[in-house]
Amino acid sequence: MAHHELHEPLCEIVGPAYVADSDFAVWAYARDASAYPARPPGIVVRPDTTEEVSAIVKLANVHEIPIVPRGGGTQYGGWPPGDPGRSICIDMTRMRRLLEVNELNSTVTVEAGITGAELEERLLRRGLYAHTTFSPPDSVTVGGALCGVFGGGGAKFATLASNWPTIVGVKAVLPNGDIVETGSRTNKHAKMFFRAAVGPDLTGLFIGSYGIFGIVTEVTQELSA
Ligand SMILES: Cc1cc2nc3c(=O)[nH]c(=O)nc-3n(C[C@H](O)[C@H](O)[C@H](O)COP(=O)(O)OP(=O)(O)OC[C@H]3O[C@@H](n4cnc5c(N)ncnc54)[C@H](O)[C@@H]3O)c2cc1C
Image (tube, rainbow, N blue to C red; front, side):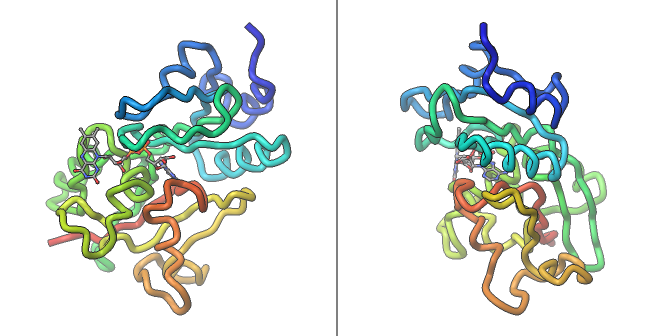
């Protein structure tokens, strides 16, 4: 079987073990949890760092190939079509590090591919808690929750599931490959402790965005009592 046109450069970015374009692999990424029609990507890539995500996005831009980011794949509105058979699916689940627990500022910073269940378990070991009531928790990622329905519920979403009010800020890769941070980190000398930094709420752009404004790679969330 011939490889996807970007198989080789994508292997150079993330390593060959984290690139797959066999029928078996792409069909495993063709659906969300709904019964809507399957839309297989042309290739699946599993980055490990924000810089790798940025390099993938820049490469895709040069070749004008659509990208669909993916967390747990549990949304049920129908999987974004991209360009079936050609688009790049960026599977975020390799990026699942717990980066910082800051008890002074009452925040936790994680990579976007960590699941709600793993974050909850790791915080509970320290006697801490963050809003991770995503369903189904073993599959839903923090990034997918933020960019999908859970995040988009808004501050007054009538369910405990919404994590909108607890998000402090994100690190994200924009559609042109630039890496940005929101919240108080728009000041590069500041910590990520405060969402409503001077200026517009840039964090809100990514919440409920379904990935169209960029790929979220890190999320800082408030610790709850
Ligand atoms: C059994 C079940 C119960 C559910 N219950 C609820 C519920 O009670 N309330 C509710 O609101 N939802 C519920 N959902 C839906 C699901 O939990 C949400 O849609 C959630 O947002 C999906 O998270 P995910 O990690 O699986 O993301 P995915 O499904 O992989 O992605 C969701 C969207 O976000 C984009 N995306 C994913 N990761 C990123 C990223 N890092 N950066 C940018 N874009 C990204 C994807 O392209 C996609 O458009 C349920 C789903 C199932 C299967």
